[in-house]
Picture: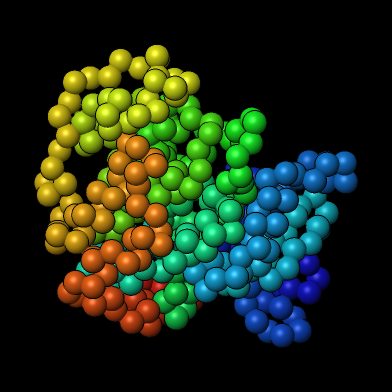
Length: 316
């Protein structure tokens, strides 16, 4: 830590803090994520180890780059480039125009496609984990819930925790206890983020897991063995009494719609994870070839000077 001058506090969480710091030698600005560990000498936390290893595997302009990491007293410090803002803050500042949505969506899909190619599931894609650089590039961040997976056939399938992803962006199979999923859980989250960028508000803002599942059902209709083939195999299936609900039209849910936009949103938001559109497929979707064209990344943000320093907000 002696190599860095702490400039300020970026944010705090249950397990640590993110600091704004300047390197004493290069004078470059960095973000330092300090994760507190009770007995760091006895046992290195598996979540932190996963985050470091998975970041090391990534080499994409749309994934936050790991500069270095080190242990300091009772913390593990992860050093990354300093970003200007995150998508959550951008969405809170101003309504996105459709050219901006298209550019941000393209960068998110490219970053997620890279993760999935590296056999990495992020498992917590949400606006606050999508950082925006000073030149307007979206970068996927916070790999604390990420994990690797195998596509090879095995006698025993890989088992993963279903207690992942923030509730508003959690796939329905996770809400019903699935432990044998793959990248389809990230695809559901991307669909939720996509509609949120278009509408300017979260699509499924449930206040509990039960209410969350209810909001999804009110949108997609009652799950059944036709639209959700693995439904009866999910651990919590027998614990839920599904109401009889007809699906809503996407045209009534997604604002400022085009045919391509509606079709792409539908591609992500399906009960059947195996039927969800992949990131690579989405990048070739007609949505990206219809008007308007994606805006230049440099036009996404502008800097606004105030008494506390630079703050990034959405460009008009």
